[in-house]
Length: 205
Image 1 (cartoon, rainbow, N blue to C red):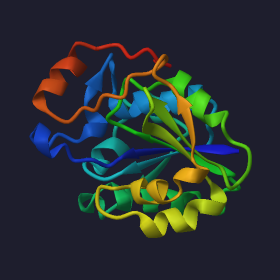
Image 2: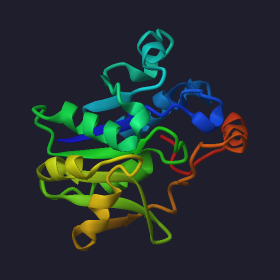
Image 3: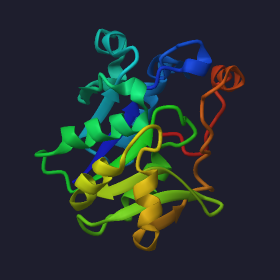
Image 4: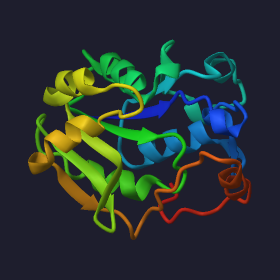
């Protein structure tokens, strides 16, 4: 069982404090879009880590795309992505999941095709794999359950699993996804314009 782990806690500081999870995209919110990509790519259950705007997401009766997802609150979200990764991995403990496939909410160009391709790299509970784009490591990232404690210990600030992945490069399987996804981030007002245009990613679910 490969669980989907969506990190959706960001506060959008450079976007005027608009929670990234609730940004609109193609008639939905970014959090719904990303959760749908995880499900359509074969992941389940899907755990969604919330931070900024968590109350609004939980109260969002107009967010049908989150039906069936497990919502995880990270009160320390302002400390960076590392805290969200730790909260998400902790929430998966005891679920029976063999691996977690980690996706970021602010990369709408990464859809089900990339999720499915990286998920297929699962071979054991020691699995470690990541999407690559023209040879450069990116998301999603697949982390086998045996590695969760060490990844959680290394996660700090905005680094997420970066330090762990750098330290275990020899074990990391890179899965080229540049033909099915676009790894752009939504971080600036200029990026918002792209989002509002509904800029397509080749990996749409």
